[in-house]
Length: 68
Image (tube, rainbow, N blue to C red; front, side):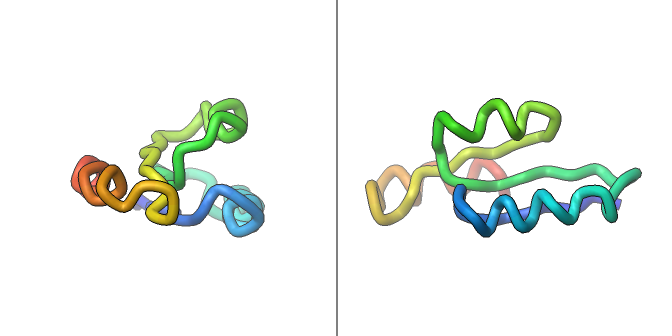
């Protein structure tokens, strides 16, 4: 089964990552905001980084289609 985790790059993402042991054996992809501190912790997953809409609404809209 394919599972997509969508979250902001802070505490909510950490909570989602804590669920990963229960999802073992499934294909996981993660959609989160672009942030340099996340690259290392997400390196083992298919990851789609999008712009934070609060920082740049135009880039957010243009980056959204790449993971749909």
